[in-house]
Image (cartoon, rainbow, N blue to C red; front, side):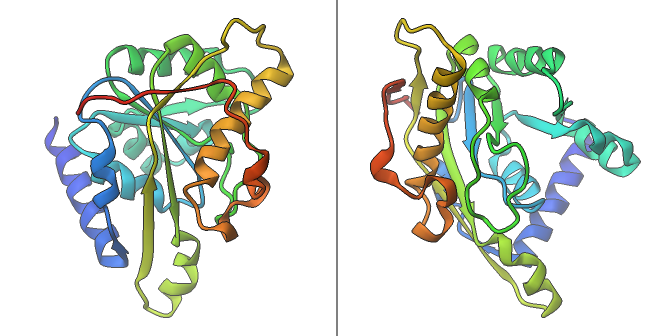
Amino acid sequence: MSLAFSVVNFTLKGLTRLLCRIDATPLERVPESGPLILVANHINFLEVPLVYTHLQPRPVTGFAKAETWDNPAMAQLFNLWNAIPLHRDEADIQAIRRALRVLAKGGILAVAPEGTRSGDGRLRRGQPGIVTLALRSQAPILPMVYYGGEKFHNNIKRLKRTDFHIAVGKVFYLSAKGKRVTRLVRQQMVDEIMYTLAALLPPQYRGDYSALHLATTEFIVSHSLPR
């Protein structure tokens, strides 16, 4: 761990705590070792530095749009965090391979299946890219959500701190259970993952996954990990 890494993370953690009221206690449910796909919603820029710094010293990385590296300052930060550039308008095989290597080495891979920021905190339809990672790696999946961060821009204008809430669910695996993974099956799989996020959120944030009674669990295998 380099000095620059330690200084940047310490500074960002302090800054996020200054700007937000954070109850990070739910993060204690994140396993202390072993590969893990941390699947989460994506509201805005705030949750990335906040959650990343609070999960240290666990090795954590995730995808970021490739255009982020066009900004020299952001490029340095994301390189420091070993973020994986993702070309979103194509099947980015190189990004998938890098992500699978992270999991093979026992790291945490953070994935936001919505593929982009929601802005308002309400869930959008999940994209099936996570299915490939989950099935190929056979890594456990842990759902985690945040809410409240959507109020950050308005709050900061009024010099008001933002209440940032975190909820963490239960670990599970994704399994095809012998079925051929067609396009429809892949979408059902990601929808089942997204419903695990929706179940952790207050009703007003569930968005496209508000109808919890429609959730299926055909491809989800429950499992408990030792800490």
